[in-house]
Amino acid sequence: MRLTSHPGHDVGLTSDIRIPLADVELAGDLFLPAHPIGLVIFAHGAGSSRHSARTRYVAEHLHGARFATLLVDLVVPEEHALDAETAHLQFDVALLAERLVGVLDWAIVDRRLRTLPIGCTASNTAGAATVVAAVRRPAAVRAVVSRGGRLELAGRSLRSLRTPTLLIVGGADLATVRTNVEAMGKVPGVVQLEVLPRETRAFDGPGALEQVARLSAEWFEEHLTGALQVA
Image 1 (cartoon, rainbow, N blue to C red):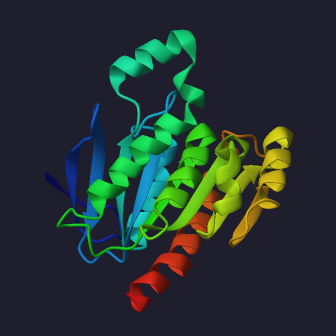
Image 2 (spheres, rainbow, N blue to C red; image 1 turned 60 degrees about the vertical axis):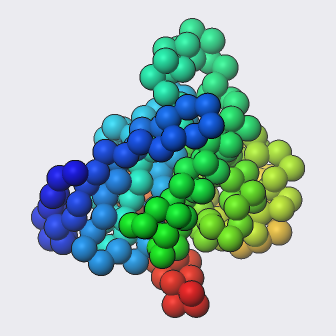
């Protein structure tokens, strides 16, 4: 555990976390600001990790809005090595969702986090996993943000999704725009699509990541702080 501060932000505690599940132990980084108003879980599947510079940029923006964050890898190092050869785990949404459900079950009983309303965010195929996990744990997940997510891989879970969900896609990523629009038509709950013009799935254009961070913070502020007041 270590004290961490960011310019203009409150000092918080950063901890290296190990989350034991039935078949594997997952690694994560937990940041707790002085007075958190909610917890946002960043879920990473194969081909990504909690050390991603883009993830950490968005997480630091959320720290400034007083959110605790848990950056967690749903795939362990040995599996990453295997997936580099087979690319199998990248599309195993059921496995990623099962592990994210395990992370949620851990968070809702952890003494530091159990009073905080929870949101989830992810990209690519892990975005589909957040949808499945939100359907399986509707009382735990109060909001979802998907960035360039492969929502079509959530399958039938889309028709049961009632968790408020924000979809952020790049306008130049036409295939993802199309599949996200199609996914919206299947969701019975609150869902909003934000298309960033000229951006690809990497969101690496000037100011793009700042927009992603701002939109994410606004969505979680709206849907998690309201949950906190009701609770």
